[in-house]
Image 1 (tube, helix red, strand yellow):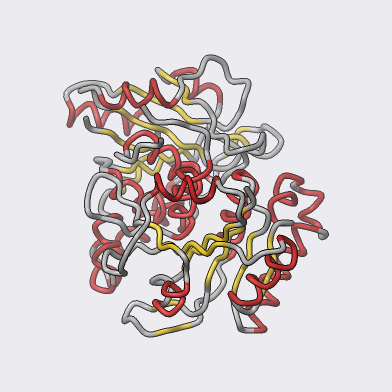
Image 2 (image 1 turned 90 degrees about the vertical axis):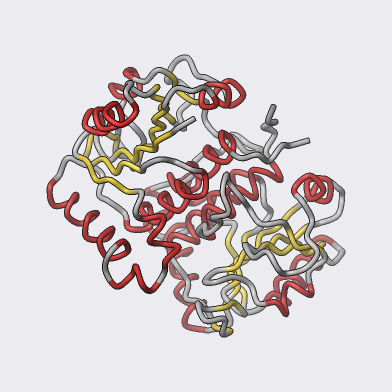
Length: 188
Length: 188
């Protein structure tokens, strides 16, 4: 099993449902890189088409991978080394195809209820446990645009806790999704 | 079952193992409040003894609960309304005792391996499913000081993914812990 994570900054929705490029958030990179390392992802693709935003993300990564941060915190270096900054989902999929020899299965995530057919976590665990490479997408801002969700092989069911409230940050939603899909922890 | 969350800023360790007061991080409040709402916590106690840090946290909450943010994002208002800013763990425990009529069971979390006897997630699910009130503590910086962990009724086992790397942020660790303890999702 080899899997990859994509953090999508474009195309995503804003509060009003308009397509935007979301700004890169420093803590998203740190939290998702640490999750990627914890759960064994091959790479974390930070997807943003804007050159200045890419440079910002690359500067953050450089600090922790080869700059002062690499000496300050070696655990963080290990995690941040997993980040690749790319302009588009297509470029990340092409890079994965190059290294895996096949186009990965694309799994999108979304908190919305009305986005069509969804795969539940039990089935998704079987999909990621197969031998095929998998790319799991998380959206920033108000979520991944439908045009991307339609391209995915699977759309994962939303996370619900104990109520209908499901407005989690991308950081905590990604944590729960990866733990549900990849951890060995078995609930009673 | 009624449970509470405590986000501990003191006493916690810094990188060198010295006891410090950690600074409040805006995104911690948002992410943990949204988690608290998602999983049904009664309150999220933000524990910090410094008056200026308390004021900062209260100002953030006020913005989202009764200020401009309350109109901008009603979902966030619901979550941020769960936050109480308190100076000490003891004051939060006293407040819970006042409303529940009993001192809550105190469960501490820690990423370290060598902190003594730990309760696993299966047992912890049974503990939180009982009728007694429960307070779950998460530490900022390099984790909750041992003097607090020793006072707890239980220390929860650390989160591991697929490797020995377990350096998660408090935001993502709290997400995984709450999902493991409270969600209805059952792994195969």
